[in-house]
Length: 61
Image (cartoon, rainbow, N blue to C red; front, side, top):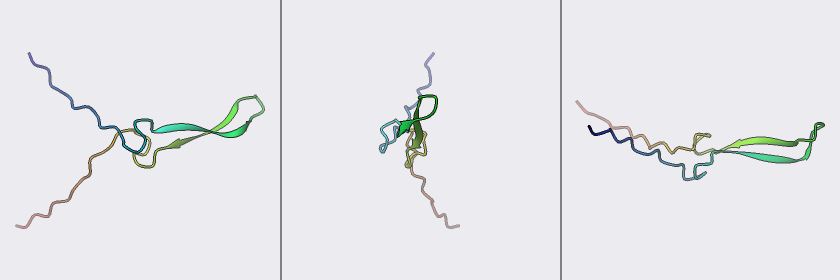
């Protein structure tokens, strides 16, 4: 029996599939670990997947 084919998710073009990164702030905290913040891709909002553009179609009756 044939299996349904699931289309692959389209990778975000802005972040190339790496939607969240840890950016070091320089310096270390009291425990000796680096101080970092997490930055998310503004185009895909941290999902890594490009969503297709939605279009609105006006229908006249």
